[in-house]
Length: 393
Image (cartoon, rainbow, N blue to C red; front, side, top):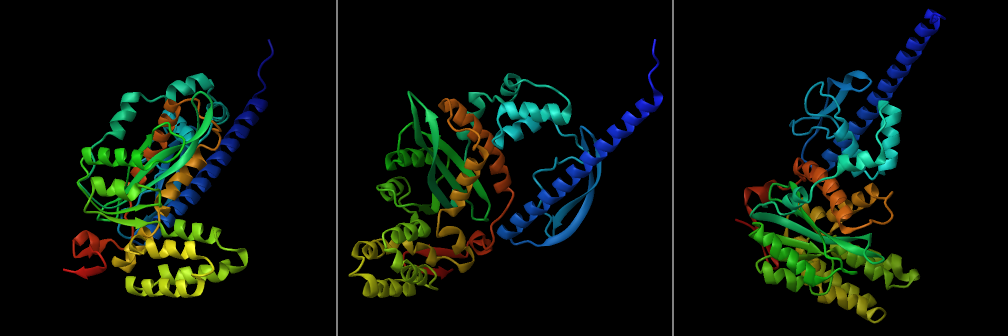
């Protein structure tokens, strides 16, 4: 019987060891880059500052990755989401699979990733069983109790392709809240099976939020869907309404000739970048003088909706950037689209709900842990907005 060649065996071990070390180095480089990017995003949205790094180790399937440079902040409220909380904690295979799936990677590709990296074969069917969450789990998250008060609530929808006796793009309704301390919470997502966004459905969603414990909302930020203002007033009559300025600007410029757009856009900027509501109203009068006869319907929209377009100017300058547009929710919708881009059509409503639950639950934990800049005065209760006026107690 032929004896194994010790030299070849040793060479194989050395090659394997070198490969594992190379992969661990790549993992370390990638993790450090991602954590640094996480901190940059965190600092853009909070009143905090970078404060160097600390070192920690991470146990992986290829062995221990030593000396990870983990970025930290001065107030100590930041922790990279990508790292397990426990020092030297291993990466759980089920968590890896769910994270990959929630990132929009198909079960077939996940199967290949696990085989190539972990040396373990899991069929796409096995992975489907692993990522399956129960209807009760989704229902419990969607119906969980909410806070009694929110400073602002964004309402908007995004379209996904779902198969129901044929494939149609239908809206997924999303609601995002900002609390008085500047932290954010995804309040829920809803599917109604309809082909277009409906104020009637928003009314049902608002009544559900009320049943789940939301008693007061200072400000709602939405687009100009017909009937949505009335839907808000029916459930939350004491709330103010902010119409998304950027949506209105885009819609206005789409109705202006190309040769006039640059000048028209500059005039619109002078409205929504005004220091006060009164100055903004003066700029609307200038817009009418200059463009009223050329684009009467576009100008009339700004006149008629000034009461809703300029609401954000009654609040401190530090927070206006967060409340004059639905961009907060649009970024959330964009992240959903990025993660599901490999799924062209959802086979049924259940598959949409499972994936949205996985994505939004994880994103909600991240949003909850971060505070937007400028909300100190709001949190302390020193400021209150009244129609046409913003004053200090």
